[in-house]
Image (cartoon, rainbow, N blue to C red):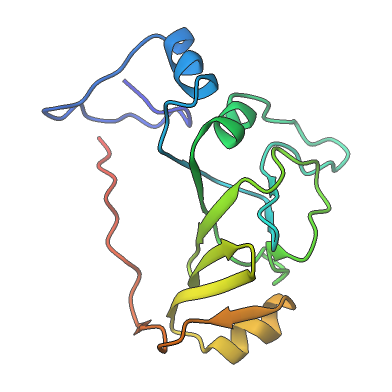
Length: 163
């Protein structure tokens, strides 16, 4: 058994799986409370770009992400905050083709956790970086919580279990 990225996984007690047609019925029927996706970009208004960079020669990864983005009650994104050249993936406006508009509610990255709200982007936690440095490096308006966010020196533990 493998995940969509063709990585083998181990079936643990309580695991379940089903036909892909049933999964689309669940997505399109609004039966998912939370969905976790990767992304090339997320905008401050919650727009998601995760299927194509639009670059010449790139191979678009069209799949069920659009159905997930609009079918889940909450969409969480897990991604690195910066590209290899240091460009922020949390942007004022997406420049890549959109998967969904205003669908992302939370973004988990290697530097911080962001909450996308109607009032803008709030930083929930930082990992080895200050709020001011995040503002400077991302170039987007970021709001902190009324209480200072916890600063962690290590990444949160991974809950994935691979073969």
